[in-house]
Length: 136
Image (cartoon, rainbow, N blue to C red):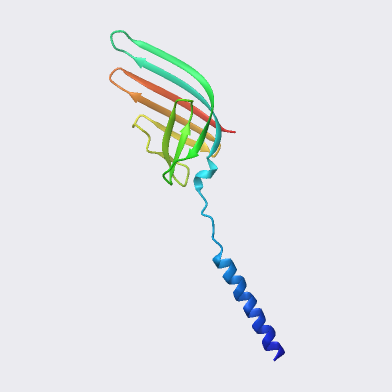
């Protein structure tokens, strides 16, 4: 009888332990978290207009911006200057997509290094932002 009660007691403890482990909620890990944070961006901006007057503007700046999760579960928002942000889709393997035009591209070289080439315009003019980012 003693052996049966000890065995029954062990089984009850085992069932209780299993119930506890199964009932614990597991936090879903967000793959975007590896890229989220404060970043240092080096930005080269160029504007060109080749109409009858013509116009050329270029500047370079370093800006401490950030990358944050967007409202959609697979998007990030990159704030690379005080007035410039871009929302992009980030796949689970770190590839960027859904750029605003087919002239734009970019990639994470690693979880702490980013290159973006953004270009808008046409018909003799346009704006280009060449961005290099390093996570702080």
